[in-house]
Image (tube, rainbow, N blue to C red; front, side, top):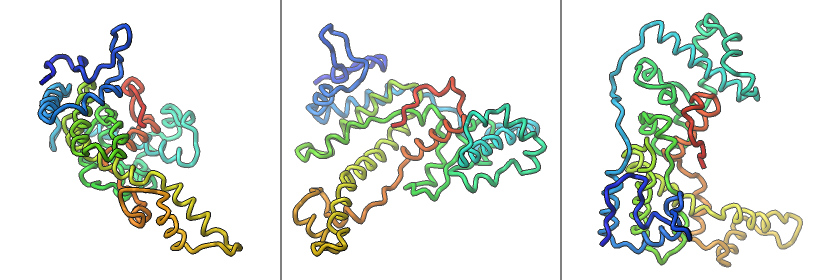
Length: 320
């Protein structure tokens, strides 16, 4: 039984290498051949691999707690002014102002400190935005502005109360989670629990190559990600289903037009959209719950839109 050595996180085991003709390994981990080899592993090897990758996680927990150093009064006022400019920038973007017109220099000229103060730092703008700055985190100097940014709770998130309590940094939220599991969901010959274990092992392996992926992000975020994948997969082809219904129902002046129920029954009887769930459940379940992955992606989008993160910290911004 092969067990990987506890070496540098960039040194992949045999399953994570896809060597070319010159014997050089591909920089992309987990090629198709690597995935196939992983699926051939026995459960004990998978468990040992998972333990190994957990130890490889390159993460140091920040010293964050409920109580932290507070700003001095002048520092707090400076922070409030800074946050006000972000609110103004975000609001102006919603009314089609260009980001180039909203740089810090121009904004500070248009909105001097006295104007910001007189307007209560434009906190009321947050009512029309998708997010707000958590005031308790504003008082605490251990947080940065990205950590202070919280999404509103009426956007369909599965566990918003918990998500908003997460103090992930920009770098931690930017960390990616693997996506190849979805390709296996349609293959009923593969045991899903086995795929889950291999996919978790892959997620840990990928996480070990990043400097800011916390154990929490992998252990909590991965199961949520799997739920999201399952939900998304169950809705594949929904546009095609609606189109077929429309073709049958929309023929108002034609004698062959059908009611919605008749169209649905015909499509169901012809098995045009075979799924592992009943068709009526498939149609009814159009609302897709949002998980922390969606929450983090939205925060990253907002941070980029309002220039919340300095360009030097942004790194790779592929959020797909």
